[in-house]
Length: 412
Ligand code: ACO
Image (cartoon, rainbow, N blue to C red; front, top):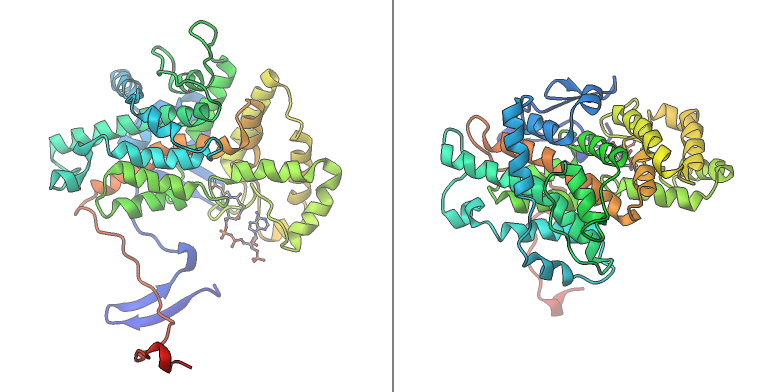
């Protein structure tokens, strides 16, 4: 409303839908959201049940292939993902070429694009043919391999981006650990004998990964599909999604929440901050959502997980400010009227901080699990009935009419 403009074209009515508020671009069977009721389901399963009973990798299988795996299917999927987590030694030079203070999301985004250069089999331009089409077994096997690689290597690339800034050597992914256990090992391993991930933190990270795995057509997933619709290789499409996720209105919000809490400083400064938000001088990061007009169901899971983590790590000093801010916003007319409630990012940053991750690494902890959702949607689009149609929206032109070029010496 207010942003809507229409014009007649030879193909019918064209409606400007700024920010895609009401535009559906695909039929999807992956994730269901009821924003008014605060419901989120992956392939029909409530997020609360999956967070309690499943694991990130099992849920990844569910999101990508449509049903929960049998024991055998899961073992195969897990071993393929973990086997493909190892990176070529050349990648070390790539990571060492970044500035010492490079943002890890810049590194991760570039690394996904770089990864595409390793696998010509995944690139339709290089193969000179359409890949990933329905009913072509070889092509489906090629697709599966890229899926295993991208999920497996996401943790390795992220850990490399983490360690390179600390001037530390890279760690080969271990065998025998879970997906998140392997990730923590690659991040924090100091020597051969002295590191095993804390099981509570490993489980907490797995739950956070699972609830971040997909959220239908958010900005980054849409970017993956938009990019993928030109039939580019999946590594380039995932790199594009990663770039989109980096922004503070999307995956950068967990980082922005902590910066905001640090700037507020203590609970007594909360009322002044709330007033500044209402005057539109500040944003209350971690609040509001395009789809949820009541609480984001993931925020309750994150809040519960935070308590588990704090039992191990001790409470984060910003927790009290966060709670005061939450409580003040939830009873303030400005936020109530606009249906603004905490989203998944409001609490997740506090967990990452308590676990010792650096602030600018938080969006990476969102991007790594979201690779799963991006791939599920990419696969669905590639295999959809009738094939892929390139995503090419139109605009409502409001510029000048035809005018003739005037040489520079004659311009007024
Ligand atoms: N703080 C203060 N006011 C807000 C906030 C906020 N966090 N979010 C929305 N509003 C206000 C807007 O100013 C607008 O007010 P108005 O009608 O008086 O102009 C009204 O609420 C409606 O908001 P929109 O901007 O129209 O909502 P939209 O759907 O376009 O944006 C978004 C959603 C980007 C998430 C927004 O709520 C926001 O910026 N939130 C903060 C950033 C954030 O937490 N992002 C993470 C999203 S979740 C995720 O990516 C995992």
